[in-house]
Length: 423
Image 1 (cartoon, rainbow, N blue to C red):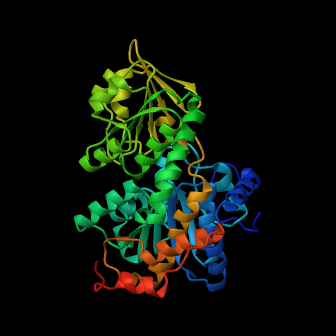
Image 2 (image 1 turned 180 degrees about the horizontal axis):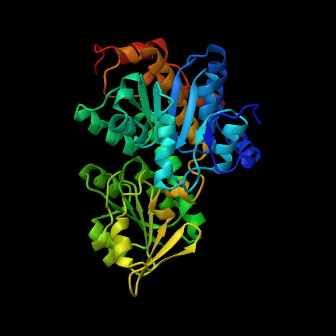
Image 3 (image 1 turned 90 degrees about the horizontal axis):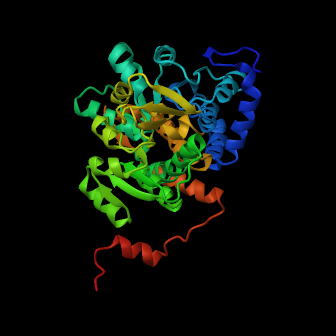
């Protein structure tokens, strides 16, 4: 353990040794972040910068935090979801790596916001969010601190939606880089990472057979695409619920049935939300669902399934039938909710594989470096990750995998840069 422990509130510091083992295991799959950490250690681009982070406290996040600290940042971390915290990781960050952490798996709402305020108490100059809760807290409850923030980063679709709404209302008090919008994030993390880890979470919680099962996926963004692809690969019959006509056509041409939520409710056996919106499946859908139907959510907040209506319909007849599975008795029909309707891949499993988080967190680290250097030039709006960062992350990932690419020949470079060449 470190000689003097930093401020913290974690479940059990005795778990630190196990946390270190798992953090080091994840690091083996994160060569890009490792390369960035080595450079940060030499150059110290974040020296003295206070970083306030509200992120999923996982092994991969631990390696991001270690990278920021190597760059000289003073990082304080809280959980962005009560069920995503890995208590051994939180313990290791405090006891071994000297990072202030405020996170306990299963913490209640009051504790969650106590922890979030502990991060805000450090007066961060850079914020890092999974879901915009830290940014929202600063703007709504601690507005005097907003001017202290150079910039923020946001890694979730849901959080970017909230931030863009703030910017549209003229309420956003500092620039935020939407890490979620980086190509090396959403094309891989959202699609392959969430696709695999959602299946993982559902299987760990239920041990059901997916082959031949009717699976309904609400939302066909990058997350929905990934889940649909993986479910189909496991032999499931997949239907997609969408409100966007372009995405609906894409789902159809990818080989999936497209239905309304009302049409899907009596058809499906497993329902998964991935929309970033509220009450996608609600009372009228629960009434139409078959006995034994399973409900899971892969969106950031537990708002996509109308849990209030589900509890009202059950009239208190709720019991836990497996770890992370609640049974709601609706009077002659039972519906099963996985991971309390929270992020199923983190609530019932370990989240994304480290190999895809490597690129996502590389974007986080490089974006923090970018806003530290350029925040004075940025307006109070939502920015995409600079293309140079996106390309550098892809380049480093390929290099780490031992893959090289052909450069353009001078003739090819001249051809694509000229308008004079014709038929």
